[in-house]
Image (cartoon, rainbow, N blue to C red; front, side, top):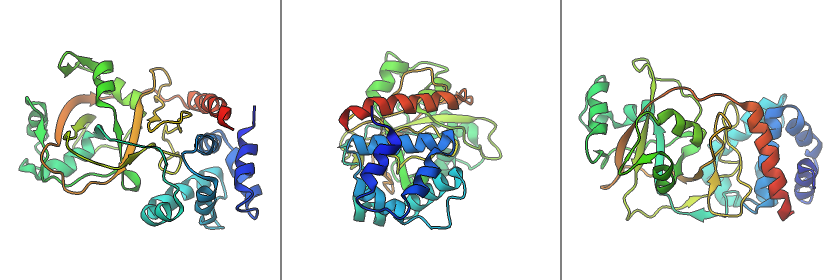
Length: 297
């Protein structure tokens, strides 16, 4: 089987040679950087990004950055986040695997901050929660879109979520922590007046048309995150559960929408505890996904 680091070097060397040794050192320094490196190799092997576009992104990283593997990963995340519109459009570094968004997730603490303009008191968490729990969900028309890191929103398959966590026409009670675990959601810092994070499901109108894509290493974030690139050649990515135990789920990303139109609704899932943290399992999963993706090399 081809070594992932040798494969990365083989792909990038035709486009740049000046910093190959530096990148090799940074991507093998620690377990966390090896997760990033293997995800990059998976993206190249599956054709989700091209070697030329990746080399252009890496070449734009400040030469002074990367004193440690964490600095290197942070610089990559910060750079692609700050120049997503221009760098990705110019280099084609966005995934070539496109599809369609069905459902999106956000943590309650962020949704609470952005949806409070619906006439709910900014401190009335009880009233907000009751509105989310009512039959039919909470209409979000006119609410400003709440994009996450890098201006992206991560979406999941509603059919898959209902199949895994549903009970007839509704989600089962007390599934928020298990759902967050399967989706690979890291713990978020709550707002000062919120003691626990609460999960909210946002459903999209069936008429919406969005450009969504299979996430790549250039969309993910690695400092404390659970992102892994998918080893499959499809329009869907694949989550890695925080605990490493439940099955993975499909995922995609799209850009921020702006003000939401009629048909977007928020549904209350429930309070969530921090999922178990299994970083060793994340590294082993990265190795397994690379072994599977190497069949395309």
